[in-house]
Image (tube, rainbow, N blue to C red; front, side, top):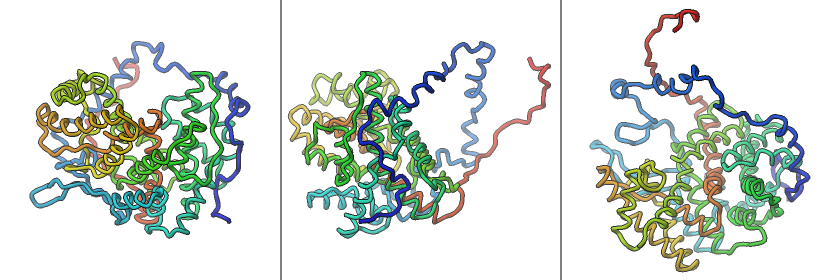
Length: 488
């Protein structure tokens, strides 16, 4: 069986070994990283402090000029900047009286995401590839089309010949998201025509990312752990017949293996993270870059950088850490009073990370409910029950946080708008049950979201054909020039 052109089709060795990690060590030894900020003269301190003093615009000017801060309207809703047929994120209705909260709904190409997930689970099959095909083509696949689509991704699991001899020296980092960015940009160099933006090439690059990112993330994680422990990382040979969920667990677990229930749970997470509208920060970043006509690798690297942020994709790791901290510091998990006391201290900056935020509660679009969180809860509850008492009790603690946090935020902060748990509140717990390391929580989110990014990139490339360029009003005073010798 033959498949479409793969821009990165060369086959490397199956295993990462000492022989192909040492090629560039002499470069690192010869050119060490600089010590940023050390030894600077005191007279240059304005360089570090000046920006925060200069770049302050009076708050009233935003109202005077009707500036949409953060591309948000005054009522908190997003500024309408485009039209899409890819997905719809519904959390409120806009009426003449203003924004009216509503139950959350998520649809992919017109299909309810909950129905797509329940159908796959009911039939005992993996659904992420079906969702990816739907997002990329706008149609649900036939069985033959789905099999072919999976085979095309599977045939791209391997990394290009020579890639691992260059890549490992850049992977010794605690931020796997930054590694994924570098890895994606490096793949540009292995493409014979990387700046081609034709539909065929765009689809092939997207399939290459879907095929290779799980292995890149696993290699990066193992290389970082290996650099600290001295253990030489090994990555199992690619299984071209595995689904995305199975592939991720396989490259992480290796000989340890995984269960069908675990893979099906991860598949649910991948389907829910596959797409979330054109206005979310990382997808909009992808569309902005794509509107300039830049290459696919640059656009996806930019989207990865956005998703890393703790206000976006990185929130899943923060929410998981907060739940772990709550479990450690709340003596009786079944006590509403103790949970309320903990959450109150979090908001006061006296518990967890001191930033005064309850992670996993509230959303920019969803008001009464986040449909993703509601879907995850059902499957997570069942998996926790199968895992044992400790997981089941921790799940109940998370449910208690979900129920009590909005009340605490209303009492402490005076927030009146509806607040619901978002998917981040449960993501960390689910990944913990699946044995996924914390530094891979957000990379797995990114792997899943690749389908949505690709769909939006192509819609931007072949649709509006107009570079995205919002306006910023200049707020500054005219300054007389002072010769260098006369400056005090």
